[in-house]
Image 1: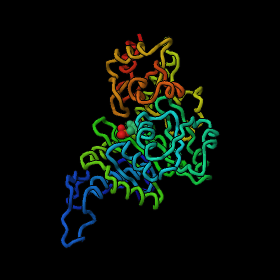
Image 2: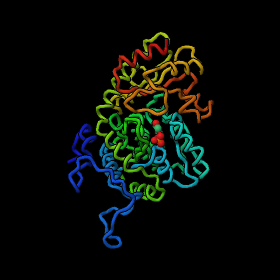
Image 3: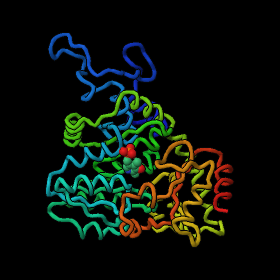
Image 4: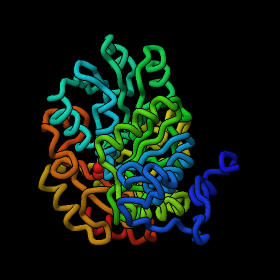
Length: 383
Ligand SMILES: *Cc1c(COP(=O)(O)O)cnc(C)c1O
């Protein structure tokens, strides 16, 4: 029955049933590490909470449902989820990744996993040739983030998936920026979808949590094994909060998209603004791909002001009042960030500038406040 539900019902009902014990409509927070056994091995499917926990399991079923997948896995953070994906690989394996990606992902790849013998190639994926040029016999994973962070480039997941399938390479997509309301990578041919559920899925800036969703049984078995063997799980309280967040995902995303669209046009028409990076503009380089694979253009955008340098950009973000200056994104409240000194500070300046993350760039996570108040705040800050 659930498979047939529309997305806006899946967020509320997908994989969910009233709790068996008392009919509790929301899954209880099973704050327990272990479960009573009647005889050794005689239990109700739960032995130890690193392996299984009913609250986490309720969240994992919901995650699978909203991403149109078979198997969901929840982790202690988005990076813990990525860590589990990389543990599918072996020393000597090669990974082709988006070049314009979340700073923490870049750090995990280069500062942790390169030391374990994995080799990463960071390429601009709006030109597919950059992917095929880097494929070798050792290439085992393609890592895509789209829209990219913070440049808002759009990568054609279907086209990348065709390349991955042809060469028998796993394709993983970081779907954090879009959320499954906007795009569902498994449907576009990805093997693994990853989330920092910290952002739009939980949606209220009150939890750090990560997720993976897959369709193939063998892949699910291996990821389940890694999740239990490495142990980077999330707790029952955080699982509960994320599940509660997901129930309003569709309503929030609708407003995030609306507000971001209004702000994108306001900035574009502002005399002091140089460039606005938002995939909804017809002039955006990947607008056609965005229109084809996304249901809306999301709540994120970036911009530069004319003649701005590092100090000028920092002054603008400091002057904002309603937009909070903070890392992260995807919560109901609007946030502003300066990627060069914040989220992308761990990427060397030459590397980040090559992908457009210049000192003048400001990134907005547009919240769901009244957009008139958000615009008034931007107006006074830009001056
Ligand atoms: C935040 C983020 C991550 C990392 O997730 P955490 O939950 O902070 O560990 C990965 N990818 C993207 C796109 C993100 O925004």
